[in-house]
Image 1 (cartoon, rainbow, N blue to C red):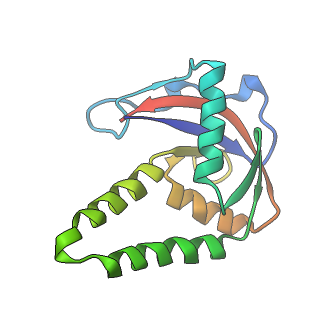
Image 2: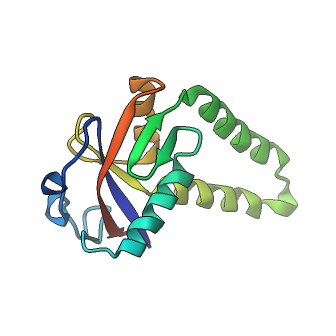
Image 3: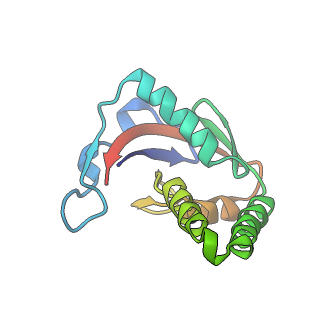
Amino acid sequence: MHSFIYQISEQPISEDEYISEFEFREGYSHILDYVDEHISENDVERALENLKCNLRGLCEVNGRELTTLDVKPFQAEFIGSIKKTADEISCEDIWKLECMLKQTHRMCKSLFYTDNWAAHAEFLFDFMDYISYLGPGKKLYVGAILDFHW
């Protein structure tokens, strides 16, 4: 399956500071089969739309600029929806649990490479902690966007 790696920093990132595919270990023992930094402009636009969807409730996304929001309402809604779905499941519709878990897993598969937080790629939940640490109203900037396969 494919997803994207987003380079995110608290400072604007010039193109000569973009991360490359060589910064990530690929292969059998790692989460990444391969990483590709050569993606089309259409894929970049699709990745930014994907970012907007994944960060809804955590950040406002305006092109390559993010503004952090208060994460508490997002966390409460997210956990509430998981609990509600789990409470509604019966033996006859146990498949709903699997669907919910797959959807949550898929949502968390975007990776974020944050220069100032950690020198490695992080999943959405780790990035949520980073946003919580920064607090609402902080500007973040998207640099490189890479395609990866897992």
